[in-house]
Length: 72
Image 1 (cartoon, rainbow, N blue to C red):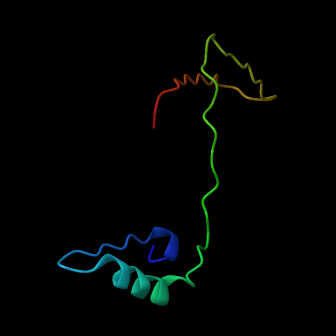
Image 2: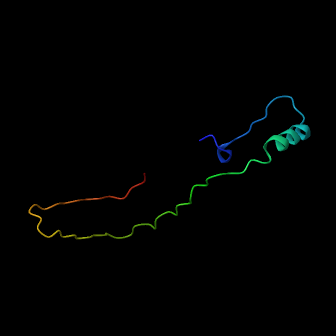
Image 3: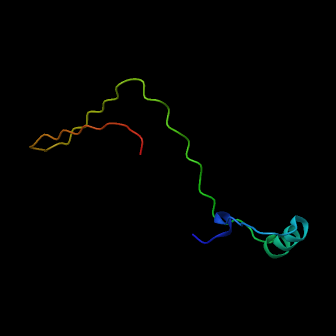
């Protein structure tokens, strides 16, 4: 969690912008982001019913599964 790509640096108060930015660059310019989470594209909109029938040989009791797509 404490990684360069998750950092937000805030400078508040009565400070001069240019010298403050010089110090920020001096101390933090060499920080490199590490792991970058992959971008997961959105699924296309479901416009029709989707149905799959799966049969298991030798199964004695039926199984019924209903699934609904919704936002996580």
